[in-house]
Length: 352
Image 1 (spheres, rainbow, N blue to C red):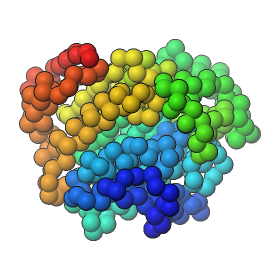
Image 2 (image 1 turned 90 degrees about the vertical axis):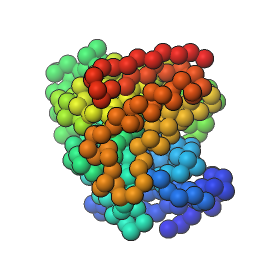
Image 3 (image 1 turned 180 degrees about the vertical axis):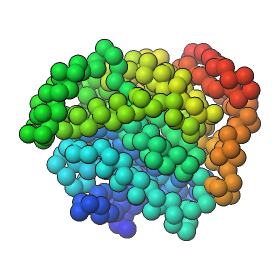
């Protein structure tokens, strides 16, 4: 382990980073650990397309570590500090498997083997999380999904002819940067100062998507779209109502279709795609309050194998969440919850 030299955390968080080798590639990994409190549970980060973990997701790592969570991230192939042509994903399945192997290596260490474990995915990272769940349906206590890329909206879904062209181009010029798309940074991050800070991050990709990358992400989304009803683990789903990158209606469909016994959906009016990195500070604080509250209620003491959440016994969680909602400071979110007794959605609307 090599601790980063510049100061990116406060005294209550320990930051570490290292490279692992997978398929002949050096993949960057990092972790944020509570320095002065017991670890409640493990959280594994999956970043979005063109993003990375050590700089872009630093705020997430710090906040969760300060709340008592051990946080682990990996830059997938072609992203951040990992090997590979920048923003080139030759195989989405390899990306998923790389995350599985790294996350498993952490989960099985002596210090962490009995800790509850959660996945955390943003945008494309949300798709990675859901694919991990498909391959390891019994290994996770739950997930936080922020504007996940889990389906292509009908109004932007490419017609069969375009898909056929993409396939042909991917076989000939897979790394070609020609796929038309709107500027992600301008459209994802609401706060102008944070938007500029993200633009200066040397590890963020800001070019057009490569042909093969676009095709792999399209196919990954289509594969999930057909299997939304196979999602069974507990999850907190977060989406900005004014998101210009991923359609909030898709998250609504995910929430409705998933068979998870414990699921919660928060829709934030006026917020954009980058809920935890591109909003004004007060909005970011609100989102992290919701995330940490959700995690705290699902981080049981003792062995993860004995977690009551593994048996879908979430009545106490739902009841407690409902009873404490009125005690928390009012927020901007529209909150949907699955009630274990009547299987009805509860809609609670509040404003500042």
